[in-house]
Amino acid sequence: MKNNNQPALILTFLVVLGLFSLAGAVIWLGLRMQSNNPAATVSPVSSPSAGSAEIPQQSGDVAQQLNQVPLESDRSVDYRKLRDSLLQKNWRAADRETYERLLEAAGPKARSIGFIPKEEMDLLSCKDLQTVDRLWSSASNGLLGFTAQQGVLKALGDYRKMYDEVGWQNRSGEWAIEWTYNPQIKRMDYKTGKEPNFTKPPAGHFPTVERGYNFDASLDGALKRCKF
Image 1 (cartoon, rainbow, N blue to C red):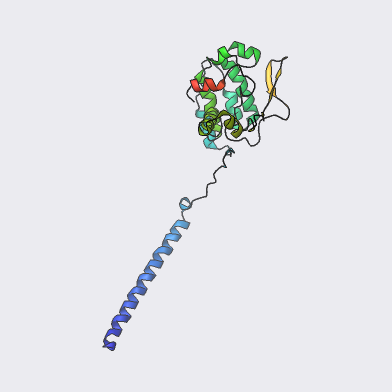
Image 2: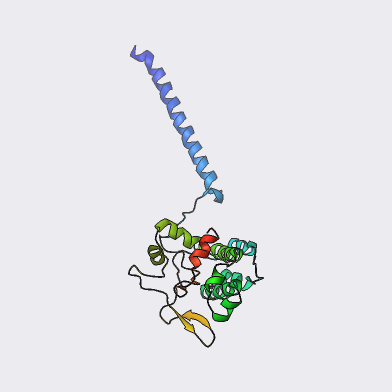
């Protein structure tokens, strides 16, 4: 009885061995095909840490996005210099250009005195605010701009916490960014040692226009009116 079963056992063993060999060949062939196809490999993607804007290096895609932003204005404001400064990741120049162009968008009194009075803030063009926001957002992968700032505010539900999160104030209410007014040229500028973080801005850090110096008129009110 034992001798009659021996050929069957040998045959079964050979069949199983053949199946294992076939499976190994299939796996080897699959690995070879994957190594020869660069598109099949997946590169790890790092996520920016909370509260820190890991602004991507400018690429053709970013340039294309910026160039596709309609430079719309209700007062014929020219936003090309702002777009070019953002394309170069020159946050300092872009921040200053935002300040000047929004004075122009607000009206003649704002241009004259260097900040936006309440009567002009109440009428500040939503179209101009949207243009500025889209430019900043396109240049930073959505990490900067009015929309990003309002997103932080909605997430935290409190202006004090939002100002701390974006790097404008600390929790005690002390301003990390401070302005001074030059009466000769009638313009605002940053105090020495109290400038924004132009090197590695936190998410929502820019633009800083009308923040921390114009307490008679609320840019937040204008953003709410324009449904940001």
